[in-house]
Length: 91
Image (cartoon, rainbow, N blue to C red):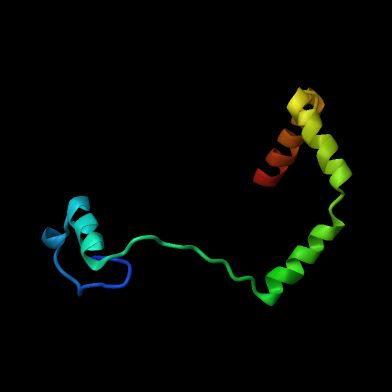
């Protein structure tokens, strides 16, 4: 299928009929498509999920971020534990 613009499509055609980027850009200009605006709509479930964020301990998150930034978070012990857990999951 060839897509000529945001609001228009043409039926299926063979691979030989696929136009290049220049043809697509010319079609967009011809149809007068200027700006494209994005929008987000949250469902009720998504809003409820956001309430879970209230349980996040931001003091702990900020402390871990600071430790990662200064290089003191990653230790050999933590790496060994992570590797052991990974190997256990892999079997």
